[in-house]
Length: 391
Ligand SMILES: [Zn+2]
Image 1: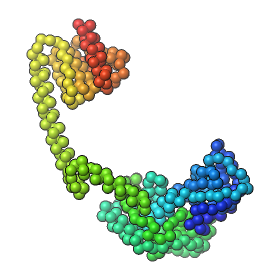
Image 2: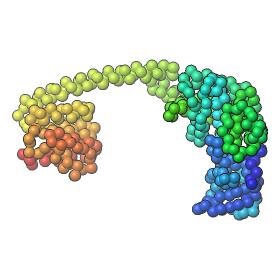
Image 3: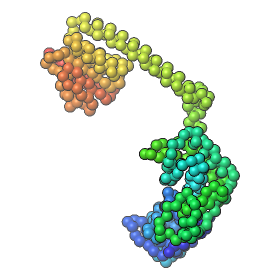
Image 4: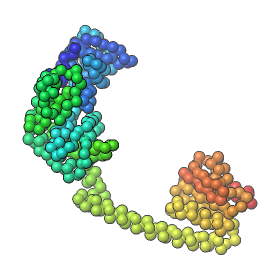
């Protein structure tokens, strides 16, 4: 069996090992070593990466009792290789994993907020918690967690017998029956839990912890958190986004929410006014065209809202006109008087055959959409032609 250096000497990231088994898997090799510092994916913690001789370690997995290193090419069985674990990735995992122990323990101080799942990847770190979690509680727990980080509490690993473990009063008791020796991770005065992952030596190495957001997942609350360098990057990105938004809105960052609300309110009023103005323009157009004896009306506008465009065409159709109303936004609304020999729906169907546009409708009203600027004159010409021919 492989000696688990990631447990016995977790600080070791560079080591030499003998290849005791090799299997080809497509273009890759699956390697078993006599000893390894590569942590295999388990307990919510992703696998380590790094190099094995000249090869890249793509993945590390438990396969039964075996620890299998997937590498990008074959190696020789029996040879000794120099191995190197990707230190930054390991540190990121150990930091988040240790932070998870801390967060889980601190939540339990506040009530029945149990951790039901932990997920860690290079993008996200989450904990699924029971209970209703208010923003006040989040703030309190985040503050206490960071207090424990600053306190620099040691994390210690020890092994106890199964009987010893069963007799202990711990937050987490889920273990298969065949586990005879149990690895416990203790944060002094804060938490004891069985765990096979990698950890920091002191809570101070976590740096600091940020709770980014929560979301509801079935009956649980999923907490997204960041620790260490990831937390610093997150805060830095957040800061620059907020500064950019504040500069655009000419406001201090604390005033941003109110400023955004004001702007939205203004926008709503402007839209209302514009709608009223457009309605007036349309009313006038309908009156003027209805008074003329010309049965065919073609209108080109640049900025009427799509809904108004359609309404204008429909109203003209009801007044006995053939109406073709196009807008700079790539839309054409067509209306025909009831009983006209060529109806709007047939015109749109014909245009769709000749041009790569979208559209639909039938009878006395139909619309064409996604007409490019370049295509617009030709499409309009085709429509006018069709109505002229039908006269
Ligand atoms: Zn752990």
